[in-house]
Image (tube, rainbow, N blue to C red; front, side, top):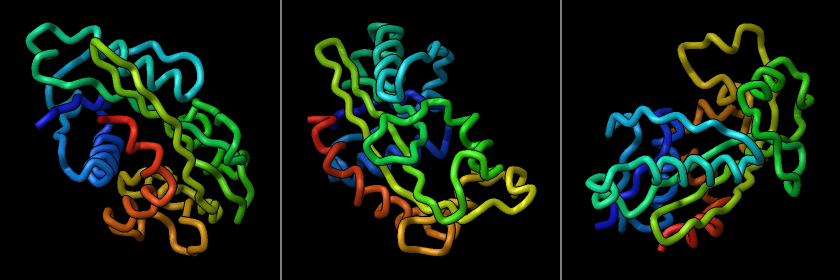
Length: 192
């Protein structure tokens, strides 16, 4: 079985990426995170969402020693951002945009916001990448949402299209199913 290193220490990002790829690839691969293998290398991110995902994959692969490269079939880089239009590239400054979304500065209540996510896989022979776009409805932002029980704050204010309940009220499988409706096709060709 092939094993891939997902280049993130963010537990939520790792778990959703792992779940998406396991479902798309029907569990033919296994995954580990930077946290699990205790890799401390930081990438200086620049460029678009997709370029940042490619940088993470390429640079983390190049910094693995020979022994670790033998263990992994490749490194997967991920980066996120947001857009108000499905066809736009999206702004990669997700931390700043999260704050703006919560304050109602980026998007209006009941407006669609697109989560843009770039994925890239790198090894010695190849660099493959894709961009995904997942739509959500902004429900509005109650006060002090950022400090709510350590929950990722946007999960409290974004809902899947056609639903009135926020993401936080979905279970993990429902969330994964929703993401896959919009990104399964793009992810299928990422890993052979």
